[in-house]
Image 1 (cartoon, rainbow, N blue to C red):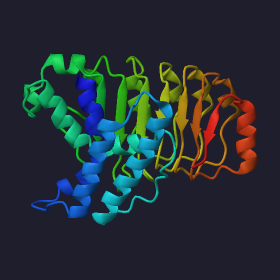
Image 2: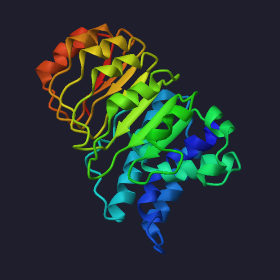
Image 3: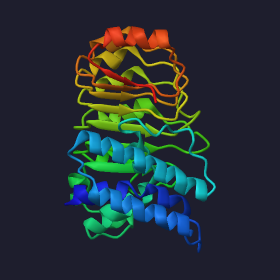
Length: 276
């Protein structure tokens, strides 16, 4: 049940752009978009891959419209990749997600009230670096022994993240999905230590300034989905050819040329490369 609650919450992050504005009510258009979002969530058969894909595209458009109405530019994110809409949506609502998790465990937001049970049972965590929550920051990751899915939304200023330290903290966890989103110029490279996260199945690095991936990416032999969209990267290492389980590769709005795409396709012939 808690996972269903989290999934439902993820799609409402677009509302966060105006919900945080003091005493500002949503416009009629924003309200209509929110209602349509709720309708899509309830009516979509998420077990049907094609129906789910179409719903994600519609959700992406809806949240771009919500952001547009709120005066926030989101045109840097393409709308028609398989997973981008829900990933961006999930990253945008870390505060709402945190509150819901705390309510689910019937705890107060005060870090002193967070019990060991909360840390022990939490498998999904979203951290908004622009609005960090006590007890729910990168510095607290050691407290979550069973973490499987981690969303990290960066700051508009692009504050640097110590990825070596982050990967060290995650190495002994059953982490299968890692999303590092919109940290702009604060994330320019991925250290070799990414290769220690051998349980990863999904890795998304949207909206950063990453120009290269390390050769240690080859150690992520279980990786099924890799997204480097919205980065100035122009070439992927030959080592990507060792990712025999890779099914989806997102390269939208990167510097990767058609010839480089063809080269990559030969390295991972069974992988679907997403360019939009």
